[in-house]
Structure formats: C-alpha cells, structure tokens
Image (cartoon, rainbow, N blue to C red; front, side, top):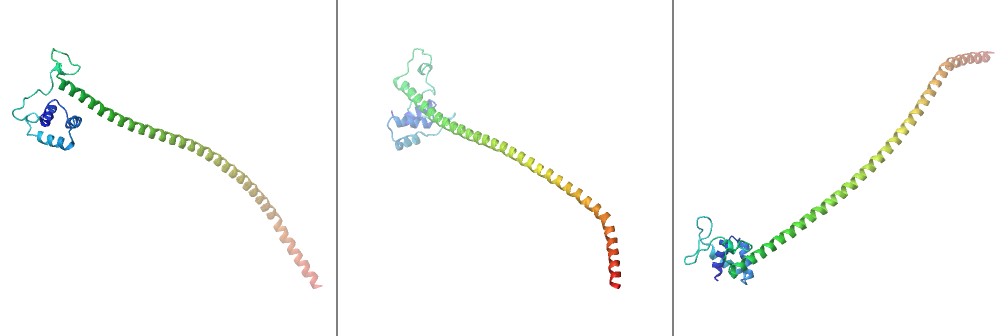
Amino acid sequence: MDPVQQILQLRQQGLTDEVIEEELKKNGMNPQQINAAMESSNTPAMPGGMPAMPSGMPQEPAMPPMGAMPGGPSMGAQPSGDEGNIYERIEAITESMIDEKWDALIGEVKKIVEWKEKIEERQTKMTSDLAKLKEDFKVLHQGVLGKLEDYDGRMSDVGTELKAVGKVFKDVVPVFVENVKELKSITQSVKKE
C-alpha cells in the first residue's frame, strides 16, 4: 500500500500523526520517507477538519464497523488481517506510551516523596533544636534571675550598712568636732605657758 494512502487511512481511523509515524517506522520506513509521505498527505482539508482524499481513492468510514473493533460485538463481519493487526499495533503503541508516561510519573512522585521525607526530617530536627534552645534559655533565665536576686540582697545589705554608718557619723561627727576644738584650745594654752 502507498505510504500516503496508508497515512490517510490511519488518520481517518482517528490516529494522531505521532502514532502514525511510529506505525510507519515499525513497517520499515525511514524518517525521510515518513516526512515526505506526511507532507504529501497534507492536502487541503474538507469541511470537518479531515484531509481531502485524493480522487480515485475509496473513502472509508472514520471508524471501522462495530464487528471490526477488537472486543466489539461481532455481527458476522470479521476484521481483515490488516485491520486486526493495525489495532493490535495501535494498542501496543498506546500501551508503551502509557507505560513510558506512567514510569515518568512514578519517577517524579518518588522525587516528591523523597523531598517530603527530607523536609519532614529537617522539620523534626529543627523542632528538637528549638525545644533544646527553649530549655537552655529557661535555665539561663533562671540563673540570671538568681544572680540578680543575690546582687539585690547584697546591695540591700550594703544600703543598710551605709545607713548605719551615716547614723554613726551623724552622732559622732559633732562630738568629734567639739573634741578637736577643745584639743586645739588646750594645745594653744600649753604653748603660751
């Protein structure tokens, strides 16, 4: 079968260009032949978006009859060898594409799970570090408060002692001044004699 006709037939069956290219590669066509056939199959589109069929080519329905579908109800019509084979190949290509995408998705999900586990591990470590820091701060705070209370007690004692010394000086200084005056007068009188 002519590659252009094969491409048009596969397009009528609803296959995408990527799937058609895979199919043609399996049939032994090289990429240059596939590109040439694809370009020549791109004729002006008919209403409805499907490419126009070249004249002289029989038009086939977009979907095969129900009896031709694998697994579809059989109404006495059996798919020809090419139609059954094409559906098996399409199914195989579709399954391989799905498997590839599924494997890629699983890989990405695994990366996300690993990232989540790392974040949870970091969060747990940070939580324990924060709890330890809080405990250390609490101990430090209690130590500082204890020292402040101790210094406060000592300063209170010093204040009391200073008040006592002030009272003593208040009582002693006037007497001391009187004694110094008296001593001065005595020394002056002794010097005169």
